[in-house]
View 1 (cartoon, helix red, strand yellow):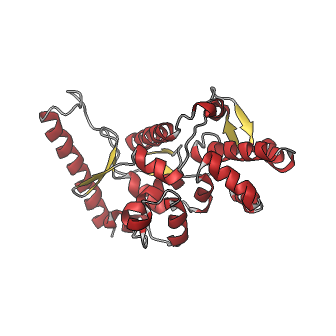
View 2 (cartoon, helix red, strand yellow; view 1 turned 180 degrees about the horizontal axis):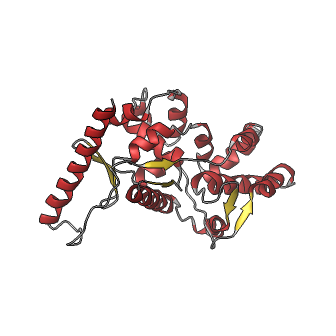
View 3 (cartoon, rainbow, N blue to C red; view 1 turned 90 degrees about the vertical axis):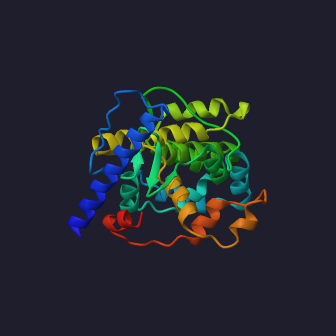
Amino acid sequence: MENGLHDRVEGNADVHRWSEQTQLEKEDGITMGYVSELSDYTRISVTQNNLPKLKEIWDQRGNETKQLFYDNYGDLPYLLDIQVDKHLFRALAKFWNPAYSFFTFGEVDLVPTVEEYTAFLRCPRIKEKGECKCISWDALKDLILTHPDETKKVDIFALSLYGLMVFPRALGYVDEATTDLFHRLSKRVTSIPVILVGTFRSLGACRRVGAGRFIGCAQLLLAWFYSHFRLIDGIVCRVFFENYSPLKDIVASSRKVDVPEENWIALL
């Protein structure tokens, strides 16, 4: 199995080199003199913030409060039910090409798009801020549980989701930079490009050195992967309805499986 895995990784590197050389010759945008410096093996850490308390708080909210959240912030809470499969995630990372910012599976190139992420999250608004300062999750948790204004509770919960799961820069804390997004809510600016840029940058940085912690929304990236490689009953029909939630369907149809990383590589 180890020899087979090594051969596949070597073969994948050969494909990358051939692809880059061919596209250089066709003048597709890569700078002359570009040299691929990808590690043969990528050992990415997908260490996540502890989210059970956040999910517990969400599960205890009433239907009216949940609907208020969906109306203001979209389908983010469904991400709490998506398990991060570290074996699958690490396997996916091996197929990421930083030079072009897409995955290559055999003869197929795939990359998450703004349209796809927008469809998943169904969020019409934004959120973002600052430098390196952080807000303690414990402080935010207390506000969610004790604040007298239900609308403010929803806002703080949304900030927590973005800070701990979508932009998880500091474990156990919310990067103050995330709060800038809330200052721009009234402008109804979408946060999807920011999420995609963070995902691409982190994947590229980890892929180049062969290690590092992925700083992005692993749950959303895996949901995108499932949407391409899993058949959801009736999705062709329901996707055209305004109230259709692809994330909700993915959560309902997903089952936890324990597949080794090398098996995922062989499958991909």
